[in-house]
Length: 73
Image (cartoon, rainbow, N blue to C red; front, side, top):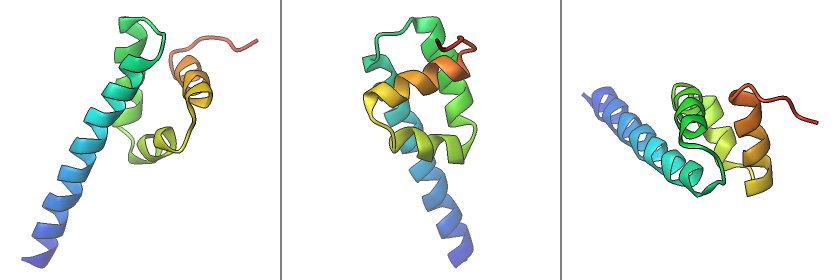
């Protein structure tokens, strides 16, 4: 029973982080299409989600461009 409660707590934490990622991406100067593409890539991988929140805004933009398929110059 304790494991089930932990699983529910973890799922709730991930759900909250997904919403926070969406909010953070909406604040970046990117297109809606890029937001959706990157949001899907980030939120389907817990490691990417954690990494995203460890970045500053400039680094988030670089991550967004890489995940969105843009070439960095």
